[in-house]
Length: 113
Length: 114
Image 1: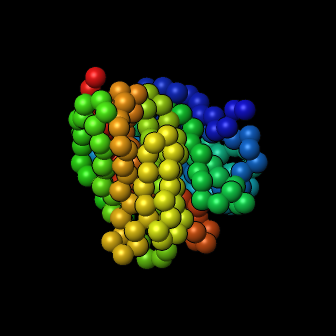
Image 2: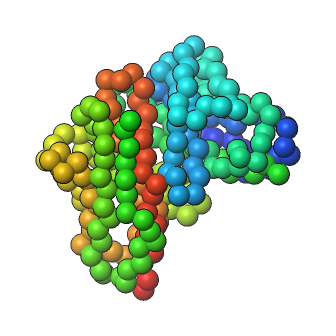
């Protein structure tokens, strides 16, 4: 019963490098999203998807790309990492018939130096 | 826009003390309300939720009542334990927007001392 799985859990990047945070869910959820968590600011929505092939921007999308080629996977790409992207990233999913409940992964701690 | 305001922490209590964490919201529609908990080094877990006015969500001894007239969803527990030490997030979502996303408060850290 894996739920929402994120990898890697920890990553250190140099400014300007690119990387992809992976997110997979095995619950056949239609909705998936990415949040970032910064001290004193709660979680903020980066990008979201309402189904395979459909993505849209959230509150803080700049510097990030996403795609949703399958129902299960929703990777988050940092194109050119900046120190301002140092944060904890959470992937989340939910399903159409499940009411409003959203399930979170365990988080990915990213440091950009 | 939609927003959630929580009391600032940290909140430090002795074991068996009464807990209240205040949460108020602003929303353009009729939101569902949630409390999530984050234990050290872990992700967020849903603690409780309420989807309409006067609903009371409850779980693990925690309770919160959806108060539309005061736009509040305060979290309470009658007797806290050391194991309740965590960060608590109040959040809202607006159904039927097609987004299924949450707007979070800034979080309140609770420290319970033995």
